[in-house]
Image (cartoon, rainbow, N blue to C red):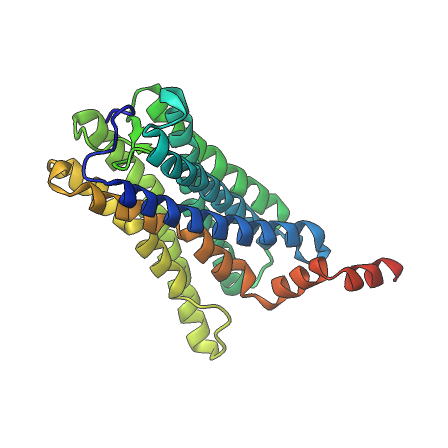
Length: 295
């Protein structure tokens, strides 16, 4: 896909503008909600627990996804007038790496939270710092490792069909892409999905015996599947047959769906919890903060 064509194949100016507008709304929503989550955790001592460290890590990953979407949104809006990807080939590689690394960290971070909740509710032991910190480090180092492989030749980053953002190049469908896809998908999608599903399944069994459900055991797994499943299906289709049979507009749908996950995760894992909302209100209320300092 060339970055210098007047407009990407299958898109008109209004359609590029529409994609950019959707990406901008998703990016601003994800950045604002996750920034609020991060700010609350940093400013509220009661939220600084090992379990919440996993949520904080997820919020950082989702902020990265939203920032990646913000770059794509601005590029889409600029493209209408400049008609080109404004950051060059090297910028595309950086954009692809950053987006892929934070996406993997978000997916694996979701699985880490599921395991942490299983540990808390099913073993009745609090998650310790010496477990939470290595777990978070593993999530980020693993994500960075897998995202760096296309930069070293196993897989490849290229422009999305709209030509204003970069991701794994699934248009080639060669042996290099297929081998990377199936290996990466097993460790970074199927394994986290399995951990998420089984963790909440065991929690559901525990709650059914006690009769006191304390967390939603079905929503996280469904959101993970619905949010990232379309991307997985697109990559799988590209590995089996020629992806050019799918229209460019339809190829952009998984990316737009995935960019909603930062907003959904912020609401599901942080902002709907009473303790986080209380901490957020304390941070945003000058009178409350002043009262706390005088005490």
